[in-house]
Length: 208
Ligand SMILES: Cc1cc2nc3c(=O)[nH]c(=O)nc-3n(C[C@H](O)[C@H](O)[C@H](O)COP(=O)(O)O)c2cc1C
Image (cartoon, rainbow, N blue to C red):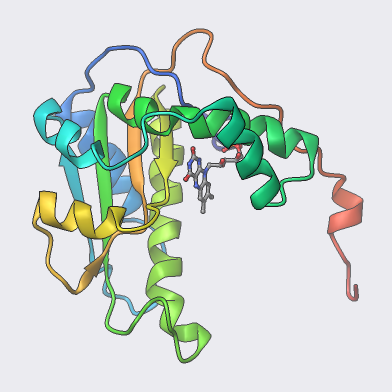
């Protein structure tokens, strides 16, 4: 697939077919992740790849299985989601957080080495490792798309990250930025309408 076609095709998918992905393809996708730029030249990243459904079930057990309409309305208010397309996105995404990952063919957990307290950085460079792994994660999203698969992600809430550490046994100096699920998109998988960006309003030549 041509590069700009991949860019156009990449979407967050939350409705997956029940289909496996070969380990070769998964490795190729993650290898693309390791080609991303990195702040300290070390690429000190690890990816835990989980295909065993029993481990997936245990890992995801902490994630809410759904949300009532009333709680969804409250969440929209509490999180100040005022834009209608944004509301549509959250109304689609929030109820699917457990199922999308459960139905994905494979769960991939990125891990970065974090030497300082990521939630209390002294300066912005202390977040460079975090920024770098998101470059790696985006490469993975694009590679999954180029391979004809879809992906989803969830940023861990509350103690989901610590819970994942206990289930998967990763070391204490590694930090998990998100859950990734990769799988075959259902034919009618929801794709929430994207916000329209008017390029000329967003590019500021020479000066804002
Ligand atoms: C940093 C980051 C955090 C995100 N967190 C979540 C999440 O927790 N759950 C989820 O379903 N989607 C999550 N998303 C996906 C966004 O909802 C999605 O990228 C956005 O709505 C734009 O849609 P698109 O990816 O289809 O273009 C996240 C995306 C990013 C970049």
